[in-house]
Length: 395
Image (tube, rainbow, N blue to C red; front, side, top):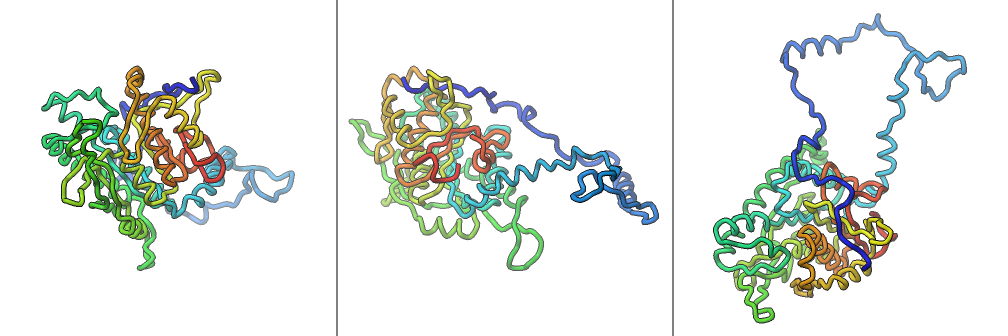
């Protein structure tokens, strides 16, 4: 047995946001009085000024006396961080990245921070396409009103008319929530207004619409999947025009067939398909679980491996993503935990994207800035990276 799937030696992040938050600036309790004191402190009396040497002068005499005890503040750790991240910022600039956000993350306390991190990748030059899922919200509704068994997770949903109505409603909800939060983050980060030559101004918007068409699965092994389908075609030109205008494109799992039939499309399959059609440099599957693959013999985590290794792992567990994005799994996978099954499915979708020409696929639980560390640092990151090869493109 080459690998097993288990929890990484890190704590889960779904929980109380207070455990992960850093301190925030808060308004002064004394209001305007404190502002007057601050203003007075900013007034400088030239007669009270003297010029003294620092300890870290570039050129100084051996006998020079240091009159400033701020050695700790002159180490400049920020400079070291920028120097190590600069090659990744430069190599990712103007690259296309497709992010998949599952519906569970919208209920996570750190969802706003995730939107802020994605906005930061946009500010650093990535061309962003987001595919947001709503399976979690649909399962909640179906379990409450239609006696749905959510333990069937991982299998293709049979979408009847009642289920399709729920999917349409929840897809609209997740779309609005992502638009609302991400637009706010884009405006907070902003960008230089080159037309007016003025100060920083918002230069990006979230654009959503019917950018792809779908096709129904129909009958598969004697089972009618009704209103469930898979991606059939995508308007690459319109998406490229939108991201070329510095906008972020947002897609939901609702597709329309050529005959006008509304179809429920698996959001992970849509992310893999869109990334391949756009020849994206990266596809990032966000997860609510801190899962990794681990070698049973060495006990080392497999955080980076090649496409052919991923294919061997999928073959071992008898999981297959077919050309029409239909999933077949061996019944023995029932012995895996839901989190482990979800991880294995994401490896399958990631492999499908790489087979379509995407350079790298990442599977990551995006807690506390993990997304930024994964994409813009020389460290191994906190997620799993699958690539066409190990060395040709930047992590």
